[in-house]
Amino acid sequence: MSFQIAIDGPAGAGKSTIAKRVAKKKEIIYVDTGAMYRAMAYYLLKRGVNSGDAEAVERECEGARISISYENGEQVVWLNGENVNGVIRTEKVGQMTSDVSKYPKIREQLTLLQKELASTNDVVMDGRDIGTCVLPEADVKVYLTASVEVRAKRRYLELSEKGVSCDLEQITKDIEIRDRQDMTREISPLKQAEDAVLVDSSDMTIDEAVEVILGLCKENQQ
Ligand code: DC
Image (tube, rainbow, N blue to C red; front, side):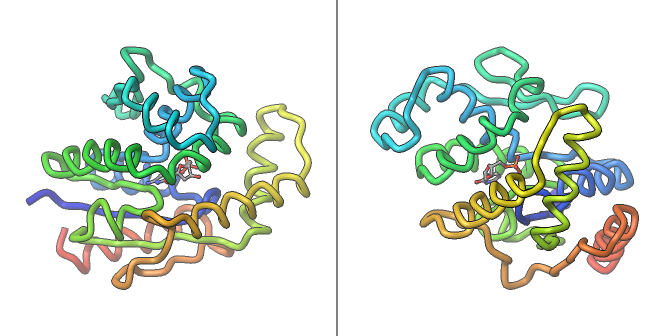
């Protein structure tokens, strides 16, 4: 059996940064499931699909072949043979992703891919439903969160550092909308698995959060 670390939590809690570091320390792969949903949303945006049109979404999503590979330890997401890493991180794609990730057909397709990856590799996988749906038997389950204010500030700093002009109030509002949408959808909503350990990173450094997770791995003998 492979060793599985599941990290779920809301947008901006630091999941990907922390999960990447844990994966490096453990010398196992990091699977960013949000990037797979983003690739699907990007495809649907390119096809001009309206996210509220369930029939169109379920029909069009069949045309998206999504897979991942690793280059120098970095996950590369492929959409119909195209590397889409560079185009899936925009706010527009993020919002579309949250809108369309409620559709069962999309979730089934991507969950299958995620389960396959974890069955043949030791993984740190992050997302919204990893501990609850994708890897319910994971060796370590973490629910990583932080207050809305802290998450908004982190996002603001990240964008400002990249030279993108942004507004803290608007970012806060966007995060609140995304949380509500991800937590209240019918299928696989974001929630803490009963056996997940809650890690609130609001007052933690990245290194501290990584240490907490590595400690949990030790407790679970890996
Ligand atoms: O982690 P992220 O911000 O890249 O995720 C983008 C969106 O994808 C998020 O709003 C909800 C969705 N998502 C999901 O529904 N299930 C996952 N396992 C990962 C992401």
